[in-house]
Length: 133
Image (cartoon, rainbow, N blue to C red):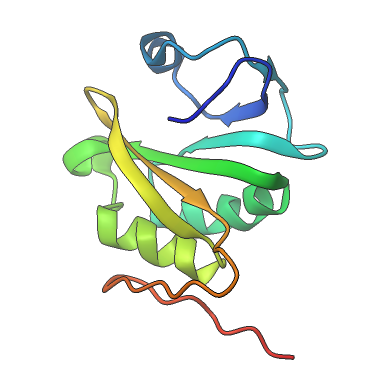
């Protein structure tokens, strides 16, 4: 997941059993999104929830920060989230995906970061918004 001890972090709606199974390093954990974070992890079950939370979480990322999004695998928990919709939502908020993994047996996870200046990103599921001068 690319996490190092001491990173400032916040995990939103994370099931306790999943956090235990993730075996995270010793992080400086906050309870709320205030200030800048090296690592933000959203656990969401619907597209509506992700669309609501993503821009706020991205706004609190420190330079070089990582925004992880986790959702129930295979539509479990009546989730309408799938890999294409997660990517599309991330791109619509100016972030690009870099890694996808299994966070726990029942949760998928995808890491988003800010795009690198000058790099072109192609993804069949999402497009970055062009910045206007």
